[in-house]
Every structure is written in C-alpha cells, then in structure tokens.
Image 1 (cartoon, rainbow, N blue to C red):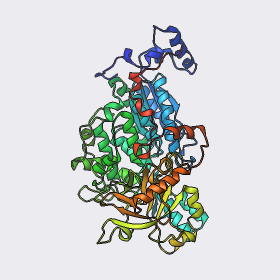
Image 2: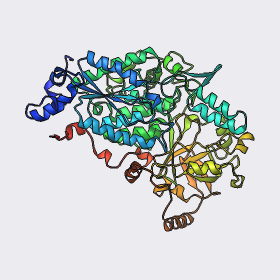
Image 3: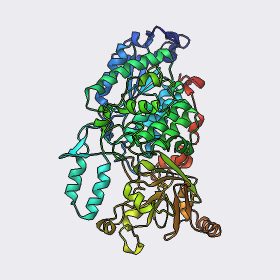
Length: 600
C-alpha cells in the first residue's frame, strides 16, 4: 500500500459487497461463489483492492485479441501491488467487419461497461483498448462511473511491407481500390497486397482512428507515459501491461479518478496533440463524447480554435510517409507533446494517471528521429487541424486539412481571384448501396469538377454513422487520370483515409438536415477561408423543397433491423455532439453519487 494513501481498507468500495457485517446474508451470497474458483476468503475480505480488467480482446476483435495474453501480465502487476484481479468482457467491436457499422457498438459497449463498473464490487479498472471504438467506449464509461481507471492500449501492428515499400493499414486499401478500378491490378493481387498491411497482432499501423484514439488517451493523461504506441509484438508492450496493473492498485489507494485527470485543460491538450499527429477525423466525435460524459462541453468550434493552426509534426500515414514502428522509435506521443509543450501549446500542469504532471512526464522525452517526428519550427504542414464548416446545409461539418494534397489544392483551391474556394455541381447518393450501384453510370455526368455527396449515412440514417464519405470517382475518370473528387456527407470516413472530405455533417439528412434538400446538378460554393459551404439556391426554393419533403413524410432511410438499432436511433445525438445517447450524459460520478442498491 502506498504510504501517502488517501483512503483506508475500510473505505474500499468492494467492502460494500464482500465485508459488510451489517448485511451478513448479502455478504455471504456475494462471497461464496467466488471461492469455488480458488479465490481465498482472505483475498476478498482482507482489505485488498478488487481490480477489474475490461477485456476487449476476442476472436471477433482481432485487433485486440492479443489482450487475452497481455492481461496475464496485468494480473501479475495487480497481484504484486496487493490487488485482486477480476477479468470480464467488453462487448466486441471490430471496425472492419461489423455491419452496418461498428459505430453502433460504441454506445452499446459503453452502456454495458457502465453497468458492470457501477453494479459489481470493483475498486478500480484497467481498460484494455485498441480497435477504434473500444477506446472511446471504455473512457466514456469510466468517465460516467468515475472509479479509478487506467487505459492499456494493445499497440499497433508492425510495419507492413511489400519489398521496400511501406504498406499501411487502411491507407493501402484506398489506394488499391483506385488501382483495381484503373485495371492496373486484378482481384487476386488486390487481396494479396491488402494483406501485406497486417503483418502481426495489433491495431492499425497508420495514424488511423485506432492509433489516434490510443494516442489521445495518453495525451489526456489516462495511460502511462509512452505506452500508447509501443508496437503490439514488442517486449515493452508486456512490460507496460505489468506496470499498468501495478499502477491501478496505487491509484485506488490514492483515490485518483477520471474526474481528476479529464479536465478541460486535458481536453485542450488532446485537441492540440491530435492536430500535430495528423489524427483521425473520427477523433472529434469520440473526444467530444468523452468530454460530455465527464461534464466538459466541447464543440467543433473548439477543435478549429485550438487545433487548426497547430502544425503537423508526425510524418506518419495517411498524412505522412512512415508507420507506427518508426513513430514509436522516434519518440512517439511524448516526443510530439514535448515539442508542443516547448512551443507553449499545452497545459503542462495537468495531472495524469501516474500521479505526476504532464510536464514532469515529458521531461527528457525528445525527438529521436527528426525525419519521422518534425521539430515544431520545421513542420510537414503549417496548419494541420480541422476546419469546422457551416452554411445553409448544416450547422457543422469537419474538414481535415493535414491531408489536403498538392494536387487537390492545385485543382480546387488555387484560383488567384478566389483563393481557397471553389464552386462545383453535385451528384447525390443516398447511402453506400446507392453509390455502389450508380457511381459508374455515365448518365450522372460526373466530371473532374463534380462534388460527390453522400447522405443518409449518419447516426440515424445508416444507422450509426458509416465510414462511406470517402468515395472514389467513376472508373472511367480514374482511368483518365482523375483519382479523387471532392466528397461531402453526413457520415464518416476511415481515419486511415487521406481524402480531404467534408465529413460528419450535422444535422444529418435523416433528422431534417439540409443535405436532404440537395438535388443532382445543384451547385455548391466551398470557401475554406470563410469556413463556409453554401448551396447556391435561393431561400424560397429551399423552403419549397423542404415543404415538399415534409409532405412526403421526410427523408426516407432503411428500417430498423435489430432492437438496438431502434433504441439507438430514438435517442442518439448528432455527430458534432459526440453521437452520445441523450439520457446518458445526465449520469456522472454514479459510483459516488448513487451507489447500487442491495440485491437481497
């Protein structure tokens, strides 16, 4: 036990279940069945912290599956520090395979984890994370229940290679789709080259949503320093698992809770760090959700205000050239944050889960390879954060500026008489099925200036918010040399995509958003300087379109397929609000504010 303990064994939350003389019958019922698995009575009633390990690894979640082995070291660390480990499962969330989208499972996993953390005799919890949604789901639940919690990432895969070429998770898929469409490769080569990107256990080796969210868990102070991006197969990954197990026991004695770490200043740090990493366009959704559950109100305006002018420092795909192994060896998240702290862009006095301040943790954590992590004064891109675009079609939509390529900028944003702006006609698709069915139809008249619009892809419309906005052009255009077009939509796109799409438009078409009023051939003006997207149709015509749509019963989207789809659709908030459940954000610090009632 730590010598500076803030609580005593009598104050452990688990005593309410396991050592409560005022209710001997209930206590006996709680204890007796745990003994039949070999746990001793002294472990349960001897004043040891009971530590939950939220197991996100399973056969259905391959990115996290190695946690099945890693938690053995977590348990060793917990026992060495005087705690008793209890492993339990998280609802599986696998980004690539889950249909209609893994985003449906984020809130479902959150709800299940809240019930476990609130209703079972746990004094603290280790959150095992990796694949995209496992990290926010776990942190949202920890924020709600507010018992001591610490994040253990499973780490990214090793670099993928094909000969001397780096092959990055996800990013290579988007490139290979174009090569397949152009006829440069066949289906067999497409699959063979795609599998080169997954050479080992671990999550995406690019700075996609998985690496971004685990990096931001560290930036928030919820992981041990330097732990987020250790590659999954490295020996240091098992070492930090052990250290995480040790630390959570100390956190229980120190009564160090998520509310002590997840402060407004910590979220500011996460926004700034995300920009410097070239982080995923899904990050604002998840970070805003975590913030709302802890009681900090973030908006997409905050992401633009704090993050847009931050430079890109991590030369990692999709915004850069390298992959996770090089990034870790170059210093990882601490090296990036050290540069940001030195530039005065971070709050160094925030508390982290190891009990030290961020500034203390970053001392001596410099860049080891400036080709992979750039100096603040010599960045890859000067302004790397998100723009929060508004207009007469939506209240908020994000554009990731670190992935605006020189080709895209030259084609659309370089008119000397109208800099950083362009006007083009739109072709509109209602969901991914419609896109796949019609994208190659010559009758659509898609040319090299067309804006492709995806609607019906949001939290209600899809449901869940599908990663379908990064649409590739028709095959005929690709063969003619146009490999990308501007894309806009009320859904999401993969964090591994390098497309500078306009994403996460809110409100979505399914809930009355302006995208529901768009028609093929309409013209949009996109002005990045003014942070604005406008449909070039007068207000009277828009009003008439809305009246016709409402008379037809509103924008139509697919029927519910499962009970959870109906439940989530009935209470989910828009993407700019974090896609949280309306009732859920009312519940905070529930372990202390509202302890669970007796069950006997």
